[in-house]
Image 1 (cartoon, rainbow, N blue to C red):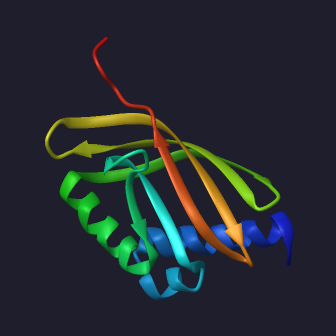
Image 2 (spheres, rainbow, N blue to C red):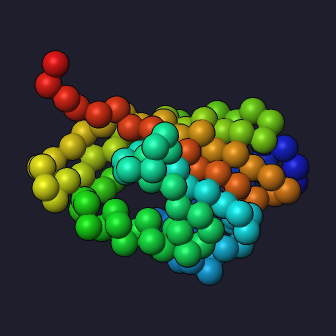
Length: 128
């Protein structure tokens, strides 16, 4: 499989491994230089930048310290060449601030049949 069909299959496998936190299966889906740009964090302008499988493991641990009961719903994904755009609703609880219910977007990039970048954007609530 190549193109959008191949990328869809990689993303399906990645998603399953990601939610199970199966680092071995994730390793099969991502490039060695994989980057996860998380929606929150101090690494300007990226939020929090995690690199490689070790970074994904660190990201899981840091996310667990920030939030719990995270769920993704209403997921829609469009593929275009070596990129995909995913829209969804994310809910959960910030451990230092209560529940959240946000819209999210991810720009996913593929190279050589693997995921190379997961760039995450969440709407943020702020009093205006």
